[in-house]
Image (cartoon, rainbow, N blue to C red; front, side, top):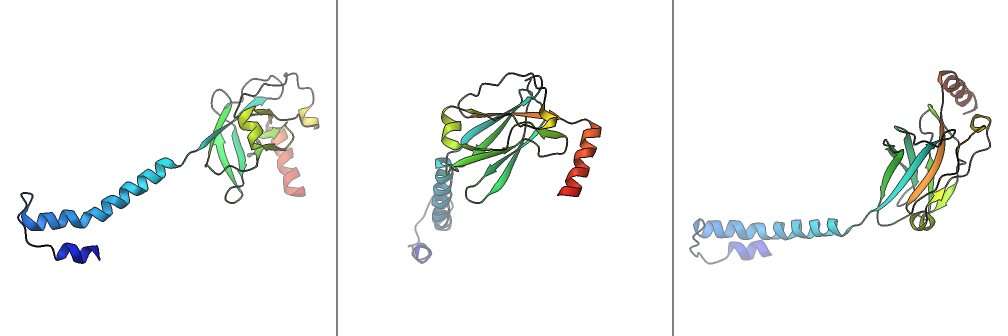
Length: 179
């Protein structure tokens, strides 16, 4: 409808290319409005940052270069993956529609064993106070000497153990046989 109106405009002289230049500019107006509306909509979306700090189960030092999974249940359940930096922190950016609970998997690869019990953390508790994962009662996680970490608001603290070659091989066999 608007294009018919633009085509039927009277022939007026425009100093930017005559009447044809004016019509060409007017034809692009709906596209320009669409682009402006789309970019303002994108700016209106907010994200929430959740940090996962991975500590070595024995020493309590930050675990650098570990791959961490966070289960996001909005809009459908899927795993978000991130790597820890030098400070042992992996950062996840969640959309404005937050899930009720967050689940962390610090053993995405066969190289690490999670020494924190797999549990669901309340999203509101994580964002307001931060949470520390419970130690797993497993033979690979015994003899830990690290103290229980302190979580900041928006942070989840978990413990993991790096497996040597022999333990990786045993884990691989265990997972292959038992599923």
